[in-house]
Structures are given as structure tokens and as C-alpha cells.
Length: 279
Length: 279
Figure (tube, rainbow over the protein chains, first blue to last red):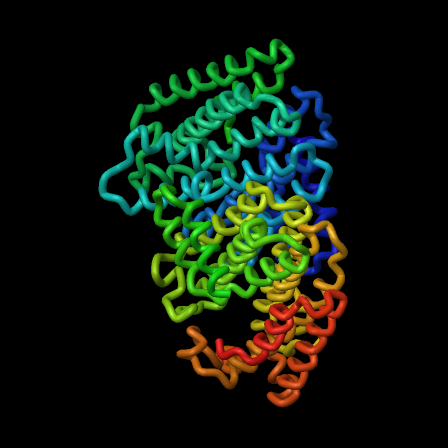
């Protein structure tokens, strides 16, 4: 994933070269140092459909721009008020709130510029699905539910948390997983099923890390959910139950790849990584 | 312009129907009650190129979504900290900051969803140019210059203000004016020239309104630039000089329409309106 990340950062740096304002610097900063899970999914799902890494790179960069913008805005004082991200100060701490808001806004625009400006196959379908997944019925909707839950008296149920996470983190992961099939104009159902299961497994692992993990390795503040009294997969299922659920979902993700035969080692391996990672 | 505005609001309401979270309500609120200048430009420039209002509507709605999102974010406490917009409380006053940030984010996503999801002719070119115009080299870049200027010791020069406004307000107005030619796959130079001149005339008129206008008619706080000691077209050129400059730009905008003969009454009239309006 690191190699894809470096290529994405270089592509975005070329796009921002000479933009000449502090927002461009904050955008590059926000994009750097992540796991690049979503970009990796785009490149590998494209490879499954015979599309090379060069052709898939703008779409991979686009999804990482959307993900980076969402982190910058979620970290703002009016949202989750986080000071640390990927082991470094969050954008509004390293610059200021206005720059963080603008850098997030410009990263979202850049995502669509990258998708529309390159020769990405079936770009319109990718743009329509990404815009929908990032919007009020997808990622933004999930974040809105998350914030509303913080002020609510009744904690969320397992069904509600599953729906919240399907929007907040699931929509972009599923988009990334399905991108290869959509670029190829092929049936995307197997990859959508893979992405849905992977995204949820990934989130449950995140909840487990929040409770059991090491803040230095995670590069961000932990135990925030428990301190806020928020319902999570771990608070509702218990650590052992959550672990079993994550394992079942990772298995389901790998099973969803069966139509691709045994050429899917990397995506299969990723499902394993999603639930064993330390950050 | 009011008829186009009503059709845009109805189209967006259909898109948001059943989204079921407070952010969707804030998005509709943010979109309502504006002049709909940009949407009107899209519909009328499309008409010049033989494209009907139905086919142009998603693009008109898209540019109004981008414009509405930019106002919601610009009004935030960390940015311009405005309490009144279009005669009503700003979104972060009517809801809260988190909802305002999310509503702006989702409005930007919706703009690209609208452009990619309908049968808009030459949609990819529209998306690429809109994303670029809205981004760090366009609108966001202009807003970043504006915020940086507030804290600076040396006020901006006329050249710098012109560049700032070309990004902050000009990029979207030019995109809207050129949209018709781009949808038709035609030469967009005349409409780009018209949009560039119109956008600047519009902004100088805005600066004059800020100094001479009536806050009740404008529906927002006035005299903020002078109070903040910010350089504007009026502070640098004087009211009479600014008025003359706006008039010259409105004339230039109308001259740019010459290649279209005398079928451009509405766009020509708009250039007149841009410098005589009261809000």
C-alpha cells in the first residue's frame, strides 16, 4: 500500500504545484502518511479486471483525497475536536481552523477534478457513485448520525451503529473496492459484497483498537468513545463478540471474491490485514 | 431568475427526499432564497446554444449547490463569522457549526452527483472545469487569499484584489456563463470573456453595496470590510471610480456577446442588472 500512497502523493503534488497559497500545503500534509487502504483497493480491484495501475491511479488518488478531506473536517473543534492524526498535529492545529475547512473543501474538489480530468474509463459512473457515497446519503450522513448520537440520551442499537458505519466509513471503502469493476464496465456485485464486508470488519477492528490499542502505534487519541459513553461494536458485543464478528466479516469478504478464482491474493490478504492491524 | 431558482430547489428537494437527517434540511435551507444568478447564467447560455432548460437544469442546480456550500462555509465563525444571510440566520446559527460544515460538504458532493447522474451533454468537461474552478486554484484559493489579507499588515493592491476576486467569485460565474457553450461542445471564448467581465462588475457592485447599501434590502451585514480596514475596489478607487469601473466592465461583458448577434437580450440585461441591483 505504501507504493500506491507514494504515487498518489506525487500525482497530487504535481496538481498542486504552483498553486501558491497555504491551503495547497495543508492539502498535501492532510494526504500524507495514511495507510492508503482505499487507494490500494482501487488499484487492486482494477488489476482484477485487467486495468493497469497507471490507468487506475487518478481514481485511487481521488478516493484518498475524499478520505483525507473527511478526516480534516471530522477533526475540527466543532466536530470530533482531535489534535493528533497519523502521529502528527491535525490540520487545524498545524495551521488554523479556516485553513483546515478550506483544505478539506479543496481536497473534495480535487477528487472530482482528478476523476474527470484523466482518461479514466467509465469516469462518469465513478463520479456519480463517488459523489453519492461521499454525500448526505453516504459518508456525510454517517458522520451526521455519529454527531447526533453523542448528544442523545439513548445509546444507538447494533442496527443503528451498523447503518451509521455503512455510511461513515463503509461507503468509500465499498466504492474503492468496486471501482475496478466499474472502470471495466463489468458486474460490480462481487466487489460490492467484498467491500461492504471489509468496511464493516475494518470498523469493528477500529473499535477494538480504540479500546485495546496503543495510541503511539495508532498515531491518534484512543479511548475517546468509552470516555464519551458512546455505543460501539465493542460496547454492544463485548471484546470477544466484536472480535468474532470482525473475523466472520473478514471471512465473508474473502468468500465474496470466489467468482475471481485464486487471482485475488492481495484483496484476500487485505481482509486479513483489516482485522489484525495495529493502527 | 426566480423561476430557475424554484425549479432548482424542487430538483434538489427530490434528490434529498427521504435522506432523513438534519443535514438534508440544512442543505435545502442553504440553497433557498438566493438570486440564482449562476443557475440563470447556465440556463441562458445553454439557450444561446440551442439547449433547453430541462437539459441545462442539473448543471444549473450544480453551480447553485457549489455557491450555497461556499456561503455556508464562508459564514462559519472560523471564517467570516456572519450571522445573517439572505435575510435569515446563517446555517451555523440556525443549526450548529457541525451541521453547517457537513451541509456544505454534502452540497459540494451533490453538485457533482447532479452533473454526473443526469444526461447532461459533455458532462465530463463540465465536471472537470467546475472542480478546478471550485478548488484551490479557483474559489477556495480566492477565499484563502481573502482570509490571509485580513491578518496582513499591508493592504492588498488593485491587482491582488482583482486576482482574489477572480478566484473567490469570478471562477464560478465564468463557469456558469460558459456552461452553455461547453454543453454544446462549442467554442467557449466569447462566454468566458463575458463571464470574466460580468463577475468582476458584479463584485465591484458588491463592494459599493457594502458601503452604500441598505442592510435590510441586502439581507446580510454590511460595512464589514471598512470596519475591518480591508482594501476593496471602493477603498482603492473611491466610490465614483469604482462605479465607473463597474460600468466599463458591464459594457465589456455586453460587447463580448457580439458574436451571438442580438439574440442575447437576457445575458445583456443581466450585465446591466449586475451593477444596478440593491442586494
